[in-house]
Image (cartoon, rainbow, N blue to C red; front, side, top):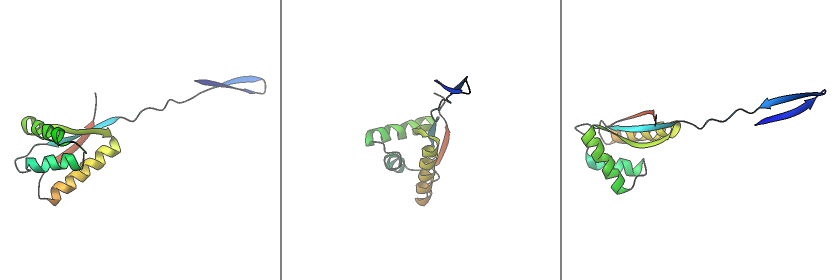
Length: 105
């Protein structure tokens, strides 16, 4: 929306910059042969705040397809949750890979 300001008899028009919504990013879980399904469900419930049925469905999708979306967030939140998941997996001795990528949807 333009705003007009009178200055020395002239009319000036200022345009307001539109604030762009932050883009969303996906946290991806990658399947491996070592991380237990129970740990993945626990991680989804703990770090990604998923209910048990949703966490189980995501874990099964990752198991079948090789990769799946743990959640979609703003970039900072996605990176923070992915890093927390990596830390917990490492702490428990699992090589679980979590990555972050832009959500193009």
